[in-house]
Length: 276
Image 1 (tube, helix red, strand yellow):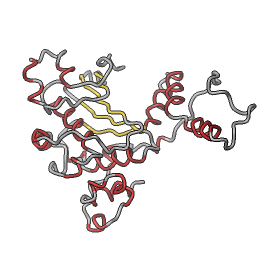
Image 2 (cartoon, one colour):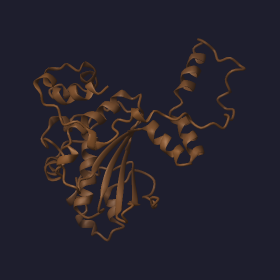
Image 3 (cartoon, one colour):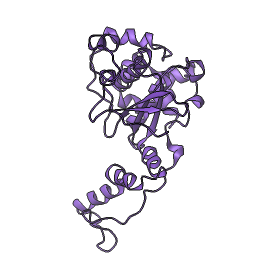
Image 4 (tube, helix red, strand yellow):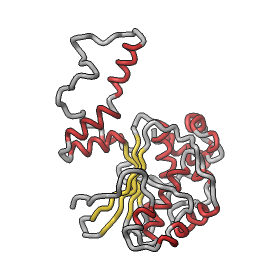
């Protein structure tokens, strides 16, 4: 069954969803994170089993995952233990600049289920494949989660996907013009590269070979993108968290360069960089 209409434009708070569910305003915030954490989008759907559910979405594009971060609150620690999502709810990595927003939003999605705002939920994180910091953050965060086989069945899943896969899915669903528009605007880096070269006088664009940026482009669909470049194809196939001495002794210089505050948590970062 196709999704029903979601919430209005702008970042979506659980309180926004609660307003349509008959909840009393004075109890909304106290059950959640007390900080105004919000998603980019919340889409209410009906599952093939006829059950209502919500897809909570966070989209990253050019972010470097270096903050600014929310002030760590005691409520975060309480929620991390209560949601039963993490191998170690006290993990410093969850509170790092790179992961803390993913941590807060995933907890919020689970609290929405626990408090009856929605019966089921999934937290989807979308980012461009070529943004290495975003992709690595998704991998590191995913490794902090309890493996699917050991989670309760009512836990909100975490599904990271690339922006390329998202646009490809729109195209495959038949919305070709929308997919092409998104691809041109956010993913056609060849045009940006060539125009940049032209701007600095290196390798100008041949007049006969390229269209003007302002001219209408021919009606072609974006190339089918390699689905294997998804961050993960299935949470069920995700490896267990690595805790061996070998992993702990690794030196993932690229991840440390991204997030100096995460240097103490070598095992998780070493696991993430081994996936690249």
